[in-house]
Image (spheres, helix red, strand yellow):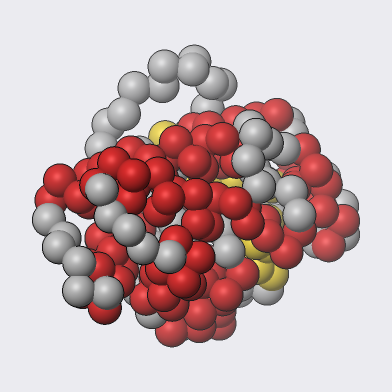
Length: 231
């Protein structure tokens, strides 16, 4: 059985079914402002938003600017005249209500709870993540919730993991496993901090960065096999 005491879980795309939540929040905010929403609009936003979060990881944009700039870029593309700051606030309100979990999440956490120290490590916005964690019922499983906006540093930066380790008592690095779906933030961050990583890769994405991943799973329940726990 691997000698892990701490399991550090990413949230969006690992525990939360984020893409569906994102699209539902977009539909709701477009309807709120009586704007037309369709598949093409959703895909355009997704491309812009992913690029913004990549820039955030690279520290070339602030989270505060990201909140509204993604909509400013989208509205320019769509020819929409709208207050981007107010639109962003309403979008975040709807996103904070979207708390659908990836199938099997609660079953896996039930098996892990009490056997390991569990923490969430997420790049995100405080109000949104706390709301979704509360609504979903996840908070009962996790001793610590680390949100990048509160820390002031974003995965994969070492400073993010410095803050996490300070809070959890500086455990031996070999006793900590990072679980996440993002190569660029979760896995790269864990690898850069000399931690073992478990890549949740349900879509069979190629590891084009050739990161030295410790484990790879396509379903969350496979984490139990990694940890030697029976489902």
